[in-house]
Amino acid sequence: MSDTLKLFDLSGRHVVLTGASRGLGFAMARGLAGAGARVTLNGRNAEALDAAVSSLRAEGFTADGLVADITRPDAVEAAFAGLGQVDVLVNNAGIQIRAPFVEHMPDTWRTMFDTHVMGAVLPSQAVIPGMIARGGGKIINICSLMSEVGRRTIAPYATMKGALKMLTRTMATELAASNIQVNGIGPGYFVTDMNRALIDDAEFDGFVRARTPAGRWGQPEELVGTAVFLASPASNFVNGQVVYVDGGILAAL
Image (cartoon, rainbow, N blue to C red; front, side):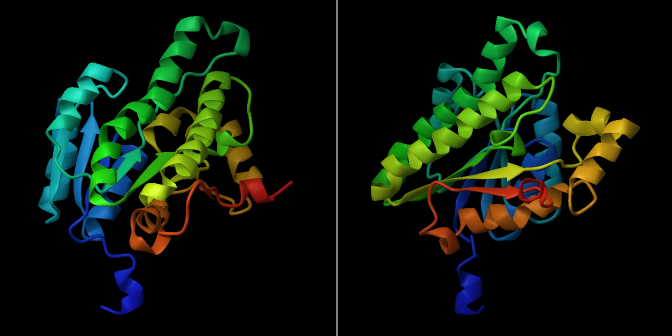
């Protein structure tokens, strides 16, 4: 392996990904495992998590599951205590709730805050002391195109993804001196179960294809390269950035 390729090698690294039973989280877990990492997938549904882990193991990857609700401090503390060394944390857990702004009740806002913001804060707080003790690490927060722009019916989601962008930047400034790089990935419109209703809506599908310069939805595996880069030594001087993987939407008027 050339010295250049070694920069992207994750052999010997332990990567933990939240919300990784399916969709973008699973695609990134598979890609990071393919780069040599040992991956631990987190989710709340034990059956779905077992299926995801079994799928990776069947391909010859080293993978484990971690059933935990990452919105609950006690659950995170208990689950992460037994993980041992964590070199890379990918905060990916997320949900979507669509409704007109005036119909988003306080419970919705609290749920979205707990999932998208505290769901990144709590796992990060659990692994950072160990990273500092070992001399460094990587944290990747999965932000969104909506960390930069808004859209009808998703005010809580966009608000929390904007908060996650600022959390990424703030963590980076505080942790850089400990050789911990904190960055984000901002996916655009991707083919996932969470977006299935939108994909099947001819009008919205047409909007996405027309609005995206690439003229199509992204495929989950198209996040892998960015995830590997931000998890690897190749990004050791990259900190506090959000890399948007959006087919060019944010670049176009």
